[in-house]
Image 1 (cartoon, rainbow, N blue to C red):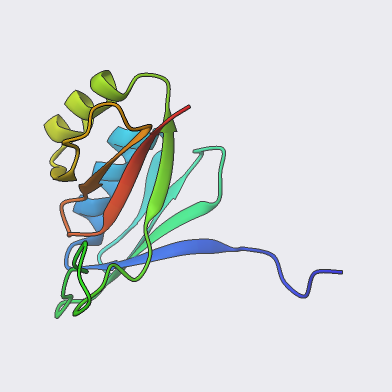
Image 2: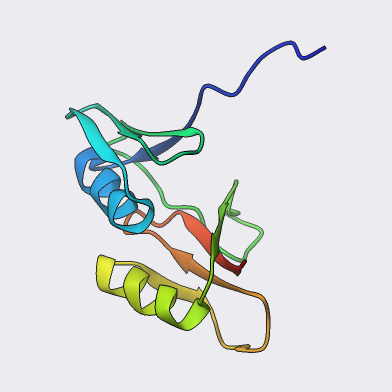
Length: 119
């Protein structure tokens, strides 16, 4: 029997509204809240929330100092099309050189790593 249920995945960032907008463009859904706490609802998955952290230091990928801490795996039907979309939304490429792999690694505008994975 489970002790708890996942309520939300919360990302610290300098601008919660802007980062929620990035993920709304990527995942769909509705941005709710303002300033220090913003939620992305209606995505069909776990609640994704964004919390103000003015001194936020982005995780580093890959690396031992300032390691990635965690990342999101996002399943897409077409890696090339999804890559064009996430780059247009403001993502940056971290590791997408091997076009034969089933995943590519990016950072959101606040520096959190995420993977686009072929579904």
